[in-house]
Length: 170
Ligand SMILES: [Zn+2]
Ligand SMILES: [Zn+2]
Ligand SMILES: [Zn+2]
Image 1: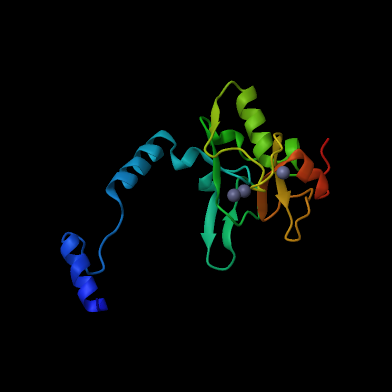
Image 2: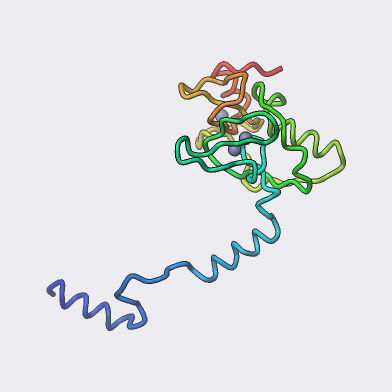
């Protein structure tokens, strides 16, 4: 069967399939996403850097800038991982992994105040094959070392991997 004939054959099989560029957003998935946004408004979604989605501003020069308060966060990836019923707790600076990370400081402050939150992702080590169970946020440098200051990249890692990458967990 020639290619032309085969395309005709396929077209006959599914006559509703448009042959032109067309709007392809799936209605079911899109309305599910609308429901998700209604339940978890973006203003209260917390990026893995520990600050709200709204703290991030796009700049054509450097990509994202995050400015949670009067300090600057070099977060380059807008990666919402947590939902906070009160986002005011997420304005701290990172000064290390684990409890010293802005995400942990925010969640601790949120829960201690009696407000609630929930993870938007499955909490696991960034290494897909890692089976370790104790997961913590960590600022990661470009050469994959854990740093004691705000970083462009923030990840979830198991305790063992944080220590392996030079992280100081106290
Ligand atoms: Zn961020
Ligand atoms: Zn940030
Ligand atoms: Zn791990």
